[in-house]
Length: 151
Image (cartoon, rainbow, N blue to C red; front, side, top):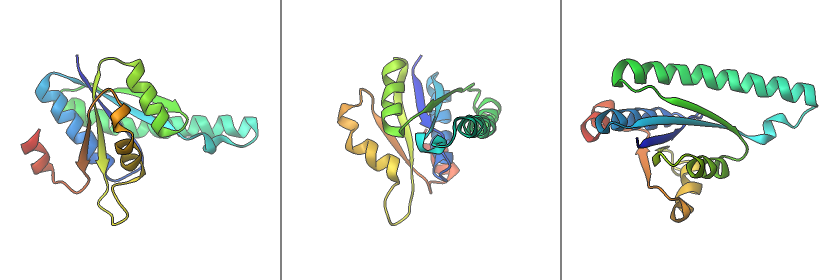
């Protein structure tokens, strides 16, 4: 089964990427893997404090994931998989793609702000030639109706 890999972060545009991935998966008989990457700098504290912060970050990610997962299950009939990794986002995304051969498309949400589409989209599109899968970039301001029409 081909899976769509979508990145869960705190950006607004993440929502449209999630919607797009779920709708495409539902229409093509695919699945969705949701990846969240915890940056290493969040834990540069004493060992005990770092462990507590790591656990709190994981709890926030799972809570955020559950909101998207419920919508995907209820509206699209898709039961997404959550993967949490620690490290720098771009290398961790590459690692996830290499480790899961079922991932067929990386779906990213692009911001509409004047500074550009966002750091993740900018970094990954620069390195897209070395990814073994295509990247779909979904505009963050695209309406739900437009998303439904194109998926």
